[in-house]
Length: 108
Image (cartoon, rainbow, N blue to C red):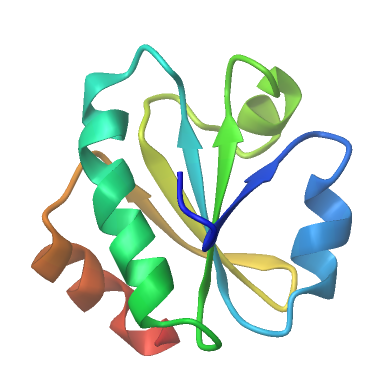
C-alpha cells in the first residue's frame, strides 16, 4: 500500500470520513480477495495522480465487519465514494483504470 492510501478501522472511520474536505473513495476489501489485490495498484495510482482532489482509503472487511454490515457490503471489492460525509456512489467489482476514472470523474 502506498503513502497515498489510508487504512480505516471502525475506530477511525467516522472521524476521517466526516472531516474529509475532498471526496473519499473507500475500498472495502480483504487479504484473501484476488480481485481486491488486482485493483489495489490502480487505486494507488489514482490516489497519487489526483492528490488534493480525491482520497483513497481502505477498510478490511475481516477486521472491520461492522462497517461492512453498516454499508451493506455483500461482495468485495466494493468502492463507496463519500462526499461531505455522505455515501454518494457505489462501485462493485474490480474494474480497469479507465473505467474507474470514468465512474469517478464527477468527483475528480
